[in-house]
Image (cartoon, rainbow, N blue to C red; front, side, top):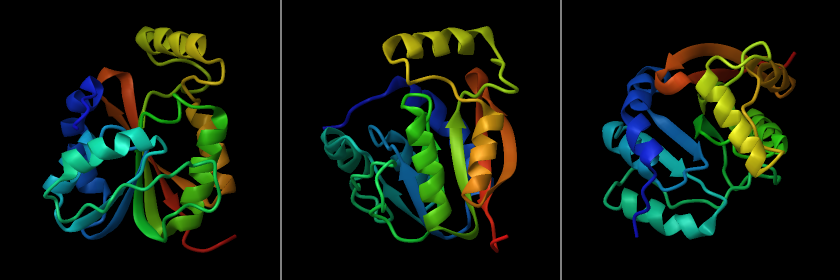
Length: 199
């Protein structure tokens, strides 16, 4: 059964427009926190030379991912990936995409995502994050501040992450800052590149 997330329906097209230039021409892309499967279905249909590996810790959503991606030969079956667990059930990949996850999860999920990306990304490949971020400790819009407050009211461990803090933590796992792209609805696409050599 296909589940529908209105936000995924709204933002899939603008994200895809950016992914066309960010992702490699071919290779394997891991999507972390695939949710309903709407994103990976949109991306895989538009980028047939890439192989997509959806992942989602909630097994109840795997049927939805399968339903959305049915008939797409470049999408593997969904994996039950918990970013905080080691090791990940995925081998080396050429890119990782993760939308709207790190703010709706404890900070340990951000750490786990960055650690895992540093382990399985091939040298020179990219981690692509999408969502709201604070910059220099400040919200970039009043709507983001209200969203952050609502998240923390639901779970004090949740909240919009600070871009500087995420960038600093990423560096500890061999991920160098790439680009920051402004997106609709006060969101951003933030990229990190796996260091080609250690040191």
